[in-house]
Amino acid sequence: MRRYLSAISVAACVMAFGGAWSVSSIGRAAPAPAARDATQGGMVAARPAIWRTYDMIVDFQSLPRTYTCDQLWYEFRGILLRFGAPPAGINILPYDCSPTPDGDLKSPHVEVRFQLPFLLQPGVTGAPIHAVEGTVRLSPGKPKTLHASDCQLLRQIRQTMLASMPVKVDSAHFDCSAPPSRAGKFWVTLRLPVVASAQAAAGGPSGAAAPR
Image (cartoon, rainbow, N blue to C red):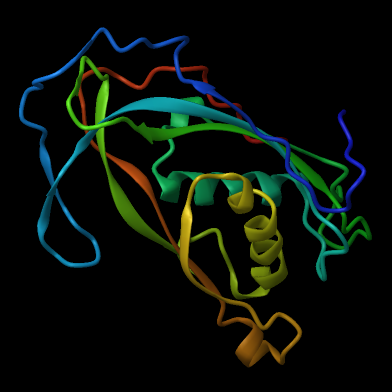
């Protein structure tokens, strides 16, 4: 497995999903579908987009609780599905994690590959999907796999995976060292492209099965 010199690091390799996609024509395009703006409630025109693949290794450092490989697999899958990543394109490989919930391995690594929309300039024709900038909030229960005890886990995900992605963090709150009543109230609200309509199926590599 690959390793990095820094304690918390992410390597991202970004490429067009489904191979190279070329813009065959630019000019007058068909009317773009409309989608509801999550922040203002109005309708906004979707933009042409392509799928972009992200390939990362997330290195955690001294987490306050132990995670098994199964737990990390479901934590990442829940977050990526909340982002709108196609399930068939999600591949997650945790390693150096604890074999049991009461183990002492607290600096695991997760290799993750997924796809998200990449917005093109308005007027581009022939794009496989249309997307808009949507708002996504991560907090205990959103997704259901994220719990009140995952404050430090999400904090390090924000510092690594989210920092390497073209997302806009609108707000974030972490008080992970506080008593449980306060430490369990954490969140990240961010904006990123989400699919409005698809002219073709996402496809892509099959998602890896959960570890056993």
